[in-house]
Length: 117
Image (cartoon, rainbow, N blue to C red; front, side, top):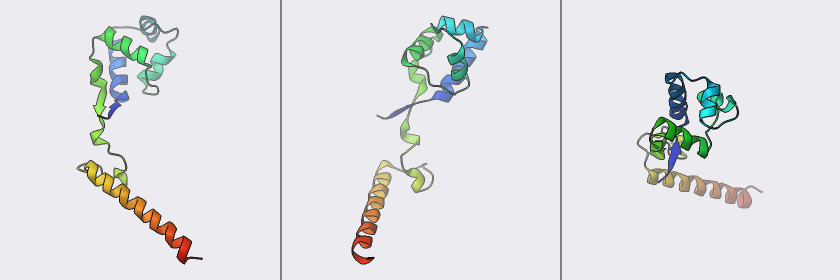
């Protein structure tokens, strides 16, 4: 199963936890074992991913299930933008599209090689 980390949700919960517990970024950083508040600030503003260690510490500290931040990739199918919106596009449709694109590119190369000299 292909999964993706929901950084926006994590950032929101991260900041909400700190604010609800009346912690400064520096105090929160100390609780998480960080030397500086800089990473806390970057995560809260959704500019940085947490390290595995920081992610695990936060989930343990906040008692939030770490699975909350992982989502299936089914709503973001690769290459779906070539066919329009990804909603309702099946994996087999995407595979067919990719094969068609590859076949067309191959035929264009052959055409240039043999007929456009």
